[in-house]
Length: 293
Image (cartoon, rainbow, N blue to C red; front, side, top):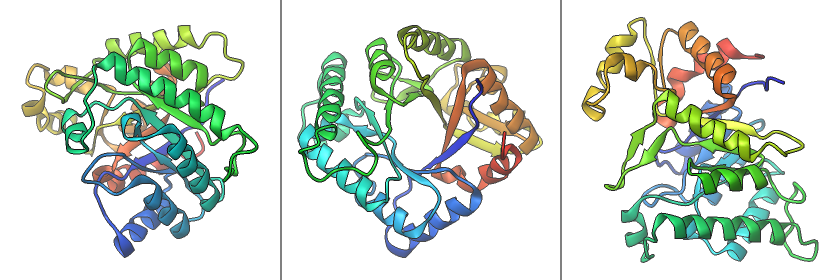
């Protein structure tokens, strides 16, 4: 069964006070279904920002995209989740990942563990959250029982298996972490392989998860090739055709982008698509074009 589209905006540009509330109101007016906050040093703290977003809006759900599990003690995180879900009237969605930015760990005074150990901590965190949030004795209690919907983001087999076992939403990173701490964009064939791996792990699920992808670049333009040429300096190894084929890039007219996203849903199953804050306005007409589909 084809899922209807949902659209989220990841508020990566820090704002506070009235500017933050105004941005959230604008996101709701543009038709976004989810207002998201990342978990990076140098940006707003996720949970207070989401409570403020809830007070300024009525319809959108509110999510973390995604929490760095290394920053959080599971018991304290469970308290934050339960309280935030209660204060937002049951609108919270919890996104979790293993974390990948070495410099942020160092600034926080945390050891930057090898990838396998970071994933191990993520697995322990998810297991504990399921236990703590499902415990009827624990207080406070979330509105959404036994816990708010869980999104798990990543590409590796262990993370995909974890998402298959626990998450209502499986989020695929459009890039792969490099040794230098950055991200390398995944080609369509690489992303397809990761989605296929996830489907194998999730074969026994009674209810299929929603599949999510973050679009890293959006340009509404009649000249698609001119738009991707701007990306050449950050991906010099890719040709224009290869850039245009990247799943995490949405360029073209509103109709072309809408057709591209329909293709992503048909080919990969991505029905929950997110954009970064700088592209929030540009993507609004695409949401309108795809409304109800």
